Image 1 (spheres, rainbow, N blue to C red):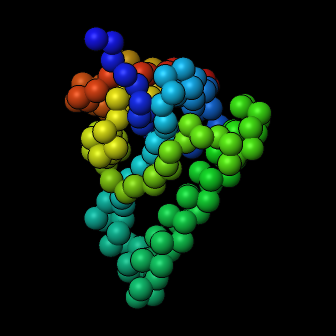
Image 2 (cartoon, rainbow, N blue to C red):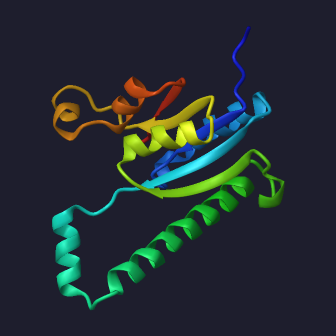
Image 3 (spheres, one colour):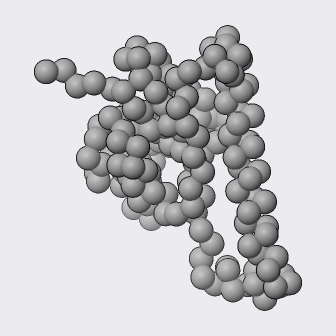
Length: 162
């Protein structure tokens, strides 16, 4: 029996160079009559950074800034989806039915991508990779590497353009 690709988790950093990765996700969703769940992960501040922010800002302000920041990211995703639907697909945003959901989640990037893939019951994860190898990957770590090796579903890695 051939696998079905009904739900695609598209993980993005929202940078402009990631548009070709999104095109792959859209192409697969259209081909298999599936839907895309867009995911952007925000890494939490380290404990020392949180402490520094708390010591500089008035009480209660860090939580307020965090809430505002998350809303700005959601607004950015919505705007980019609208532009993409118009520019790349020639559709009005309301007609762009391949997008099922757009999520902004805070957490460690690789672990969050994997947990969200399980949460949405994804059949495929689509994400970009910078293609670092060797020493660079060893020292910097690679989200793509972690996701590929720990994922329970297939992962399509699309090279990012510079």
